[in-house]
Each structure stands twice: as structure tokens, then as C-alpha cells.
Length: 331
Image 1 (cartoon, rainbow, N blue to C red):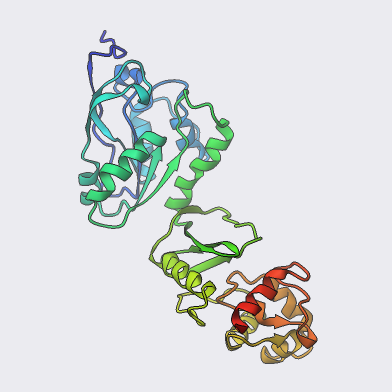
Image 2: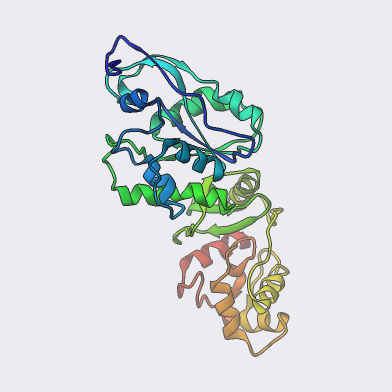
């Protein structure tokens, strides 16, 4: 039997598991010694890969390797490694030398439905960034997941599994793209889908991602980032950002009315209630503003109490951020 732990042996990886229905690619580094012995991806009994792949879909692991491969294809998941061959003593990525890469860029270019890549650990991510993405002819989004290797004990299996759910979220099109605007007041986090900005989190608020896979920014979120940074510099007074007004019918009336409040001006809760069609609904207006997912774009900071009093912003009574934003606009 071949000793795949020998340092002087040239190791060769496997062919990719992929077909024309594949939507995501999971990218490893190089099969470990046990995988090479069995000629199967992730054959080490302590590697969590197959446990996670079946677990995120609520299924039990099948023992037959051919059924595992079929399961990947059924779920539109492609699988490959970044290296075609290398030398390595043991199974640790840190021991790899004389590596020859697989043509992952070529695979992605010939499978246009694969738009998302998940890196199983840091080594594959580093290779993807340096050697694969520069050779891709289209936009690819990627995410680093914690390695399923038994050598990676930095976080618990439960925490890893939670992060691997991003694959299922992506396949179910529960996807957000994240950009971060750097401002003097702190970071403003922007989330978008393929078409619209969906959420903005101002400094002091905790971003909520829900059951979404969150990738780095796309053209929509980056467009918003640039404009928000320019707004905080005082260079622009209005946004040209694609968004959808979300909420109940009444909340939508409130938000649409608020869009007509000009830069540098304020309006009271009662006045906004009248604009939304119910002058007696000032309290309901306040509740709607607390649920506003697009502050700045839908400028809830321009709503004050009578006499211009700051009685609440982002659900925080007397929030100084509102005064800062109004001062920025008044200048």
C-alpha cells in the first residue's frame, strides 16, 4: 500500500465533482492522506465535511461514497481542490511544497452558473484570491468557511456548522452583499440584494443578518457606500441609490411621505402623520420610524418632536446621532 505521508512522494488530487447544474463551488486545498488512500474526497472519519453537507439540509449521512457524490450534485454543489499535485508530509496544508494548481479559473469560466465559491479553510481562500480570481472573466463572490479538518479545533463543531449553513442559504437565494462606509461617526453597514439596498445600520446599531449568506459588496451596495461617505463629507444632499420601500401599508405611506422632506429641514411626528393620511397617528408614525430599515435614504433623523426637540431616534430616546446628522445638514 502506498504511504501517502511520505514527504518525497508526489501527491495527485482528484477530478472535480461538477455538472452543468452546479450553482456553488466548495474549494478545498488537497486531499488528505486517508482520502488519497481511499480515493474519496474527505474520507478521514474525523473530518466534518460530509457531516456538515448533510446536516445543513437536515439529512443523515449515507455511507456509500457514490451516493455522497450524487447528493452533492442533487444539491447543485460542485467540489474541487486548489492543487492538482504537491509534496506533503502528513495531511497539514502547512507542509505542502512543490504545488501545482488545478485550473479552477477554467472550471468557473466554463460553468457560468457557479457564481459563489466557499473556501474550506484559509489556504484555499489565499490561493483563490491570489491566483484564481484574477483569471476569472466575470464577477465571483466568495466566502471563507472554517476548515472541516480535524486539525482545526479553534472553534466548536456547532459554531462551524452554523457558518456552513451559508451554503444552503445561498442555494435558496437568501443572499445579501455587505459594504461598509467609513465615516467620522463610525462605520455604516450597508446590505443589498442583486437589485436594491435592503438595510442600513448606522453607528451604534448592531447589524442583523438573519438567515442570509452575507458576501462582500456588490455593485449596488458599493454604490450606496460611496454616496453615504460623500454625504457625511457634506458633498451630496440627495441619494441616487436603488431601494424598495418596505413595511405595512401604513408604514409605506410614512416612508414615502418622509422622502419628500428636504435636506436640512425637519418635520414633527404629527405633521408626518398628516402627510401619511392620519393626523391622529403620531404615535404610530414613531413606531414606523423605529422599524425603518433604510435610515439616511429614508431620512427619519429629520423627524423631531414639537419645537424641534430630539425625543428619539433609532429607538433610543435623545439619541445624539440625530443631532449630529441635523447639524451636518444645517451646515
